[in-house]
Length: 145
Image (cartoon, rainbow, N blue to C red):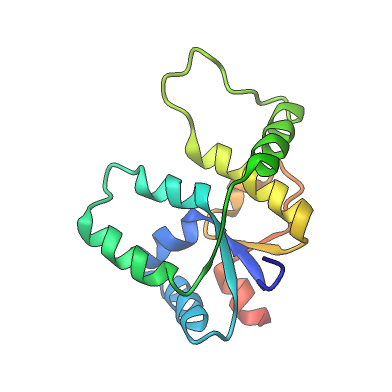
């Protein structure tokens, strides 16, 4: 897992799917093994749970994921991510019938950054402003590497 150069979140894969040129360049670099990218199983859950996800999307993402390092959410990750969430004073309310998967994804990524000391590449940097996440957008990451 420490072999990765950076983490990506679901927004990068969604940007790739929508044809974003920077996301496509980043993914092509991953396919060519110029950069090693990791993503969490929760990020995959976040993508697969979308209402616009279909069989064509599944086939495309499965092909692409072969070139990424998928980081399993294990017991330690679940507990530590939940601790970060709780300590951020944003507990999940029992009354909510729909969880904000993007919000929960942030805390898994924060835990992995604490554990791995890797930069996060995101297409939604505004999601991470409240955390201590070391992040950059796709364009700036590509320019720096």
